[in-house]
Image 1 (cartoon, helix red, strand yellow):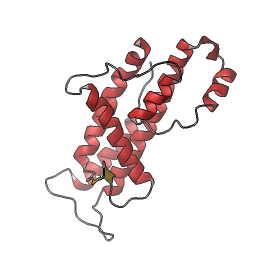
Image 2 (cartoon, rainbow, N blue to C red; image 1 turned 30 degrees about the vertical axis):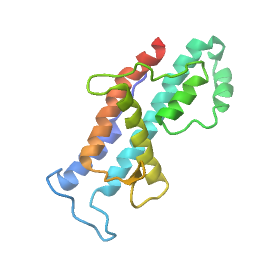
Image 3 (spheres, helix red, strand yellow; image 1 turned 135 degrees about the vertical axis):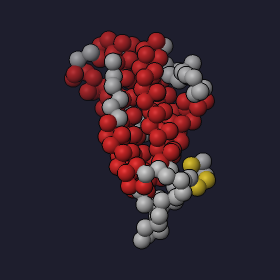
Amino acid sequence: MVDLNLTYVDELINVRHVLHGGARGAPKKVEDGSREGASINRSCVVMMSALLQAYVQDVFKICAIQALPTLNTDAVWAAYWKQMKGWGNPSADNIKTLFLKIGVSDVFDGLSWRNCPNTTVRSRLNQLNHVRNSIAHGATVLRVNDADYALTLVKIKTFRNYAEQFADRFEQHALGI
């Protein structure tokens, strides 16, 4: 079973919590006008995106070898994976496109859990990806779906919990398709 290790994300969340405590009210502004802890929040998003990307790649490898048994040697797998240009950030569309390469038309079809319907499974991945892209491309004001987005500690914890729930279910779901 593939593991999504969120230890580093948890450490960043703890550092962020110690910095501001998660108390009511916005953290104080720092010299550049951003809020105290914003860089830690952004680091959490980038870290989660990278961890989810590696997790999905590992799940994909298991599923690909199951679907195409000739991929079971390191050399053949390396050559196959090298052809996966365009795979990158773990957005719902990117993951769906990746699994399409082994004949799975929609790897998310039927994936849901309590308080997280299928539409939310997809939209939360996309939201995390939009925030990550804003950060990675140097945006000072984060944008999601063409609107300004405030990245708070609460939202970081929501993303973290979502990532954990996603990882608890995605591999078994993908293998069962």
